Image (cartoon, rainbow, N blue to C red; front, side, top):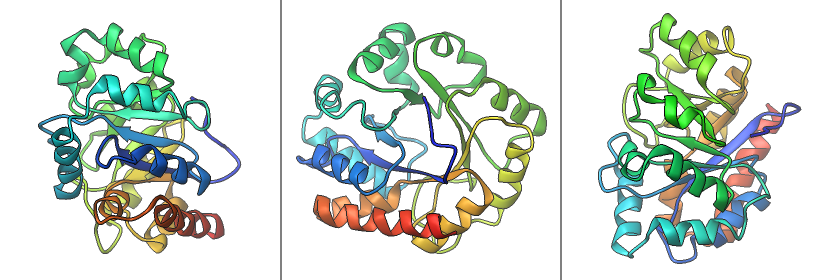
Length: 245
């Protein structure tokens, strides 16, 4: 997965299937300046996600969203920007990591995030033709950070808080130390996520690392009925804020 090195990286998150026109929202995010997009594959027990993304996941599953259907829709937009699938280990191991990763790759995905897959069990997924992105938290000890920095591919996802996803009024204080600890030992881009909701927060986070991930704030707008154009306008405000620094 190739991410830009000449500006701060902006990666929005979108739950696949949460609304009927979700690929129109996906295209709007691309047009608004997304450098890559994290696409959530709905799973019934999203343990790392807070209320908003849980609601989006429930909506997607209630609409009968399936992995096969998601992959068909994703293939229509693949190749525009890097696409990173995000899901839970149950979906990965059900048919085997090799088959799962091959299916994602064939649909046009470039990377995979599996937050509940222990580092010690990543080996099979690591060797597939798909970048396995690893997460680090403020509580991750230095020795394990070294291993995450060594084994992650594409980028390292820095979780700014000890908690679930969700919008927050301010950027967590723990983000500064975690970003420093990762950038000191990592050659890959470090992206900060969890709780980044406003243009000002995004600009602050982007100063600490190589870029930001925006998730719950995106999905709250989608669930509240934002049109693709309105969603694109919100992301464009984030893009402008992090570019202006």
